[in-house]
Image (cartoon, rainbow, N blue to C red; front, side, top):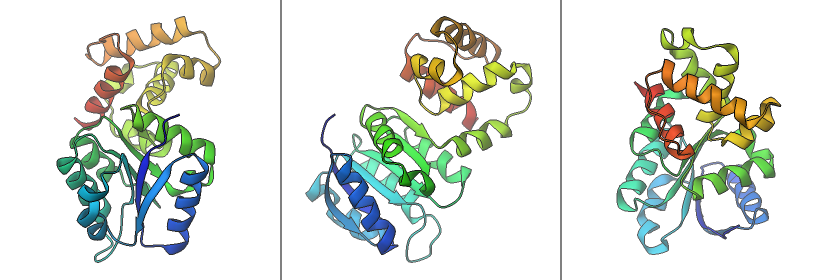
Length: 215
């Protein structure tokens, strides 16, 4: 696992310090932590982090400062990984983040931070250019689609949800306790039913699913 240079921005001192400890335990170097997004952006280019972990709502308005900062950070440093954290499922913010470029981004509920394994897995996938969405966010995104999804079987919906979370074929097979061949067949059927081109590349398939969810 590559050690990443990470900056953290969260107005809650307790959660911010907890994030720093969790990230350090995961083997990463937290170069600076902040209580607001503007302070992070002011030092972003100087610190040149690999990953920014931000709360969605921070001072001064406690609305979408983290989202705005994430988009600005990607504008300044296109290669930086972004992990947004939220207390609640806020689908519109997840969609806004993804619209700025869905490679190397993640959106998780803060409850997931309690699990070191989940944090480590999310950061590893973001660092590799993947997309990580909290299962609750995916469920709401999928739930918003009606017509195309009505054509999917229950199993195909399960596979689609895991794909949108950024899982590869082997991980999907493990989660659903089926063979990888069955996963591939379901993925083929999903792309056919949703009129999405299956490129044969797992990362591109995930991006296609996210693009479809945002339509």
